[in-house]
Image (tube, rainbow, N blue to C red; front, side, top):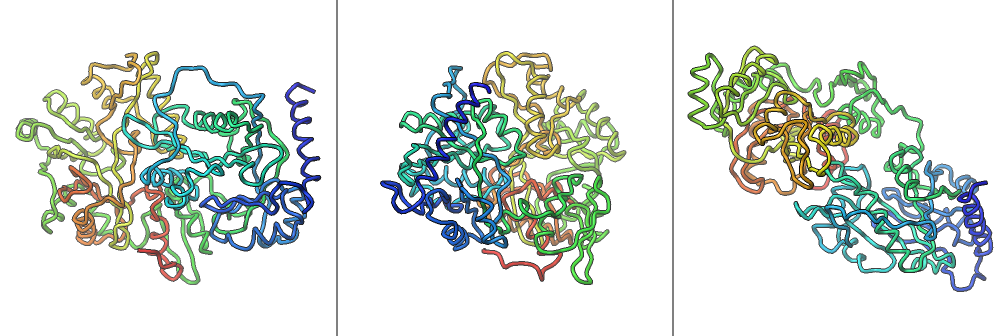
Amino acid sequence: MGKSNHRLERGFGQSLRNWEKLRGPATKGMISDAFVEMGWGRLVFGHTFDDNERIVETMTQYGYDRRDIAMYIIDPHVVVSLAPDKLFLDPSHTFRLWSYDYTMDSRTRNPFVIQRVSTRREAREINRIYGACHMKGADPDFILDKRANKLRTYMVARDLTHDRVIGTVTGVDHVAAFNDPEKGASLWSLAVDPQTDFPGVGSSLVRHLCEHYFTRGRAFVDISVMHDNKKAIALYEKLGCQRIPVFCIKRKNPINQDLYTASQKYPGLNPYARLLVDEARKRGIRIDIVDEDFGLFTLTLGSKTISCRESLSDLTTAVAMTKCDDKRLTRKLLAKNDIRVPAQIMYTNLETAVSFMEKYQAVVVKPARGEQGEGISVGISDTKDLKTAIEKAQNACPDVILEELAPGQDLRVIVINYEVVAAAVRRPPVIRGTGTHTMKDLIETYNRRRMAATGGESRIPMDGETRRCLAEQGLDPDTVLDKDKEVTVRKTANLHTGGTIHDVTDELHPELSAAAVAAARCLEIPVTGLDFIVPDVQGPDYVIIEANERPGLANHEPQPTAQRFIDLLFPETAVKHKE
């Protein structure tokens, strides 16, 4: 048996023996029936309870819409058997990092800082990241009220350059929780913004939290992780964590439904279709997959059946699709209804195109029909580049349009049933230099992260447009980028060409919301994604450049886009949402 296994046997074996001794009212000093309120639910310490019935009572008293977790259950099979309709054995592993096994990281500092949460903005950012990672958040007031408490430690990773939170982790001190004679602690709710371009955020958060407890005399930190989270498990093992036989029990509820039901996962569907199918399944709506590759499925409730291709359904008419499909027609209809749009011409000859470009100094060249940013070139101000851009657009569609380049941010607004449901600023992909890697290597690394974060939907193509944008900045794929230097490698902000999406729903100016609803009504389309260019999302100025009849609703989590879509299709299943 290896050295680490001897340690595991000695350390955890002793813990099991101690736990058996600790059970019962005669234990001196240790708090009985201990649990900690975490904001997203309660963390129940099962080995502090006198009997299994009390664990069941505690776990089922509340928690139907909470993420209650019971850990260190000595008899998990017995506890579940006492309430099989309410509890289930969580399919997670537990890893332990012993203080005597931990090695400090002596490498150079990261280009971000780890600190305790201190402001309401940071607390809100924590919930934004939880939403993006499909995790349940906590009330910001709870986080701020408890942040100075020794019982809980909330840490965030902050990108100082852009003043934003890019990761978070929470710790619980077991000595403060139940006067733990083992002097342990545990780590919870590790989450990293899927759109950050910084490497090593997760490992830095784990290290900081563990070092925080080790310097305070804690003997170990325990970490619960889902059995199939290979990336996280690899991180913990790299840090020296050892797996221990600790079991968790959770409450059967909609939050945890996927963990204890045998419902089909539909792995062949893309994220946009899967999001909607999952929401329908939660409501008891029958799902039939027509074609996974194309995202085609039907939803049936009673005698009512609706066919969908992702967010495009039978409720969107062919006429409404036509109005969105051709960008020339979209602009014409919006302009007739006094909705602001940019200047635009149809490409007929190079002379006219050059004249238009010179009038507006810089233009956007794009196919009259198409989606996902295909064939689009932004910021064209040179005749040679204009020719190339026109040829590129013609490869996607014979009809090409030129549009004035409106300055501002790329804003996507989702309107469902003529109500604004979500809004997000879309930003072009930015690469950060290391001082040792070429642009090609950095883009490949960026693509791996974005592909993992978006289910394979987002990557920067090394095509002519990317090379053009690099060349404008005096760069090429073989250039070694200086450490921490940032380079925008494309001018379009489409997700499918590597762009990132940042939720601004709560910041949207009322006039922008009104314009989005007016545009949807003008196009007579019940579900649409409208592309705005705005100087400021909190201001009234805008132009609308496109309307998408099949917007990617998964891009706007944690906003309730899937819920509102299913509400539209099957209003009888809707639960009235808070305004």
